[in-house]
Amino acid sequence: MEVDFSTLAALYQREKTGKGQHIDLSMLEAMVGMLVFEAQEAQFPGGTRRPLYSPLRTSDGFIMVAPTSPRNFEQLTDAVGHPEWRDDPRFRTNTDRNANWATLLGLTEQWTVERTSAEAEAILSHHGVPCARYREMAEVLDDPQLAAREAWTTIHDRAGPYAVPNPPFSMSASRAQPRDLVAELGEHGASLLREELGLSDDRVADLRTAGQLI
Image (tube, rainbow, N blue to C red; front, side, top):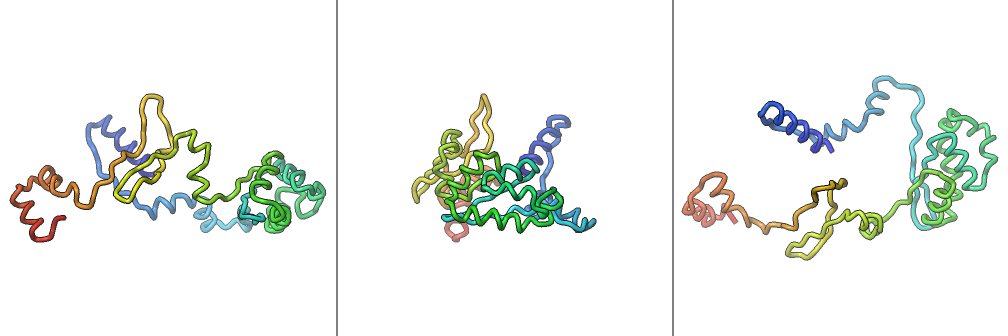
């Protein structure tokens, strides 16, 4: 994402000024930029931490349940068959629930562990509870929604065909996807040396003879 933003910003400036620029992008800094809450918490401790949505066990995997609002909490109590939780002093208010978050998730897990991930997801979703089951990557590759969105492109190389993700956006007048082109090792080395660096055919041959070019 940071690559896209920085590239677009540089292209916009080039459009306005006619001058390009070099972009120095740090993966570490990109990750640090996602830790907005943690950075503020370290500098100005608030005394209480926000709830963490930990995965809950099911009979065949895991599911994430995120009752993020008072309404979601009420929907959760209906879904798991425990409406009495609404009057429980540990869960009566948002502050109470945050203070006893691990207990709430633990009780919810007692319900999810008796059901498959698909069953738990269906019941929770029916009641409007934000949730999502953990899926294996093989399931993601076969996901019908992703197939309908044409989210994958098949690439071929010497080892055979394999799927790679397309960009997560679509445009009305253009098609953005990876090219089905995987170069062999050293396939374009000689042409790049000639075209980009201006090396002669003899110099390229010398480099290959010396083992410095594949």
